[in-house]
Amino acid sequence: MMALRAHARGGPEQLVYESAPRPSPGPGEALVRVHAAAITFAELGWDETWTRQDGSDRTPIIPGHEVSGVVEEAGPGCALAVGDEVYGLIDFDRDGAAAQYVTVPGDVLARKPAGATHEQAAAMALSALTAWQALVDQAGIEQGERVLIIGAPGGVGVYAVQLARARGAEVTGTGRESGRELVTRLGAQRFLDYTAGPLDPGASGFDVVLDAAGAGDDESFYRALRPGGRMILLAGPPDADRAKKHEVHATFFIVTPDGAELAALAALVDKGELEPVVGQRYPLAEGRTAFESGSRPRPPGKTVLLVG
Ligand SMILES: NC(=O)c1ccc[n+]([C@@H]2O[C@H](COP(=O)([O-])OP(=O)(O)OC[C@H]3O[C@@H](n4cnc5c(N)ncnc54)[C@H](OP(=O)(O)O)[C@@H]3O)[C@@H](O)[C@H]2O)c1
Image 1: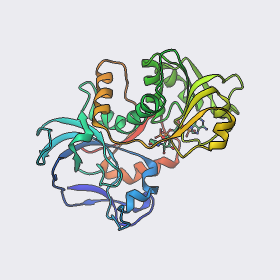
Image 2: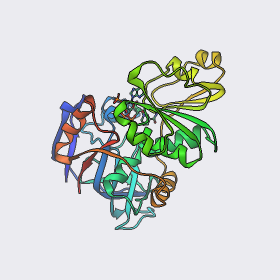
Image 3: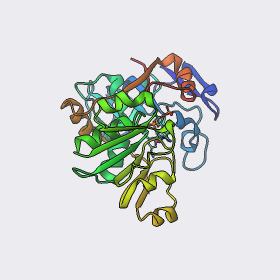
Image 4: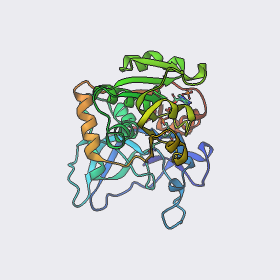
């Protein structure tokens, strides 16, 4: 098969489009013929991309852990059937989907939303799941709560805005001015341009703040919460002293692959309550250029490699 691979640890400059062995599904796994794979720019910087848990070298590695495709073969004990259209998030310590085929544990895959293309489904696999786990599993948002989404036009942000609205929250998003139209169309009642200066002093009293920008432990995000409010961080652990000072609950978590939650997200897409957002598309052969684009301004939403 053809694949995008790196033979040595580094950035996009290490990626080459080349022939690679086609994998075989083990027990409980499906071999997926990839139609689209979304990429996370930061994945090339993570240890688990390059080394196994015992510290041994994983190279050559295949990136792109957000997949949508069709089951080509089911391993022993895998509940999926040949021909099923599926999507999912693949653990980052396994080979990814920037290839014509990938093996994936069957239980982290869900049926692709019928109303979405493969590229749209791939674009949701990590970002929508992260937004769901942040707002539903971690923050437990409720009807009528005031929610502030930092980085609302981003890969995770666009789903966070929609999920918060679908759960009856009142949503404010922050981002670059160019994202205002998209974010308000997706349901945010208010939009703040973060490049215009510090967070609006009027941005206060929120029940939940989600840092979907990975902007970090910013003092202004804490000030935006009411006492007892919940802050969810995606880029790193909170400062416990700062959380205590502001009397808020601050949590960092890392998204985990979950087929059942992806099935719930697919159902929202098919009901018209969740719109997948694709930022930009590249053919698999141009995967290196796709990764390089992470350091430049880009349209809102995920970057997707087209494979099928
Ligand atoms: N913990 C987890 O499991 C998990 C899962 C997924 C993602 N993440 C992390 O979450 C972050 C977002 O990921 P993503 O894929 O959604 O990234 P993305 O597509 O690059 O989106 C980030 C968005 O935030 C905006 N932004 C940057 N700084 C901001 C600030 N100070 N205030 C408001 N908006 C700001 C960016 O705008 P401009 O760049 O145009 O200014 C962009 O629109 C990354 O740090 C990623 O590593 C963590």
